[in-house]
Image (cartoon, rainbow, N blue to C red; front, top):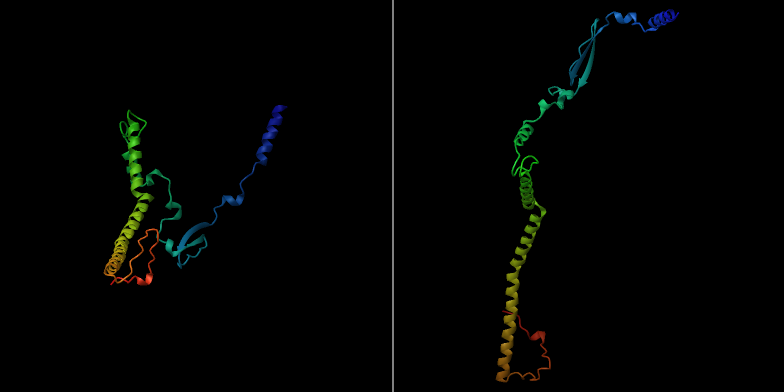
Length: 195
């Protein structure tokens, strides 16, 4: 009895299984997909062939297809990257900055020092030093002119003082008070400009 039930279930499963459609057995029309660029004309379909045209920009005509432009295949790795990888092969031991071999850590210190010197040579402090030097030059360039003007004023005041002393000695001007606690008043109109 169980055999009959199993046989009936198998027959029902085969009968209910999807069967391919009769229309799919016959070969259909052939489809040709064509890419045309710019204003190129699309070929006409025939009775046994359907032509589908995909229109692209004229600038894409001689370019590598977009699907092939990017690849992660190792064969497409740039040569410079391969050379850089080969430069590090076998670098171990003393002064190598590598965990392999004795003395490898000494190279790390040398690399850090070299990086610090490089950063110092190209850092922002270099620009600040240039600005300070420029400001110092500008200040020193005006210092001589200011010193010359101050020297001229001092010499004029000394000359006027000597003239007044000579005039007092000659008796032309009344002598000043001998009392040092009394301040000396100078009239600005008495000061003559330097010639």
